[in-house]
Amino acid sequence: MVLRKYAFLIKANGYPPAGLRTTLPGDGFTSIIFASGDIDALVAEAMAMVAEGIQLIELAGGFSDEDYARIQDAIGDGVPVGRVLYDDKNAARLKPGWRK
Image (cartoon, rainbow, N blue to C red; front, top):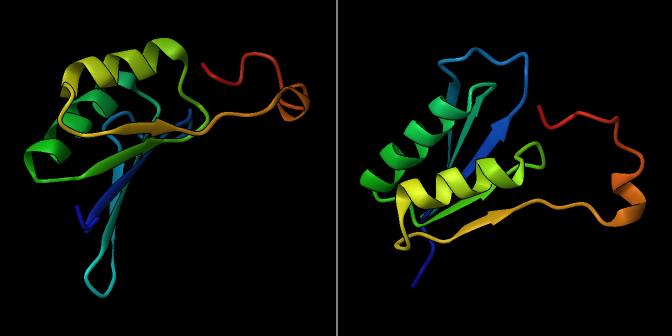
């Protein structure tokens, strides 16, 4: 499979609950970025992206294990979902509760 449509989802307080979406077009490759502080909006957006033909979704570091599972369950097995994780050293540098 040639990757042509990639998505990156960001969960962080401070973004509107309905979310912000932007597209970064490239030469034969498109990246779509969506950010929201609301997991329900992020799940809905992931489902919409799959319906639009997205080939890969990556989640930023603010997603909990439960958030990851909700997105994976909602979109099924047709599209791979990756996530940003921190090693122990860098996780220790994050403020407690940052994944709310």
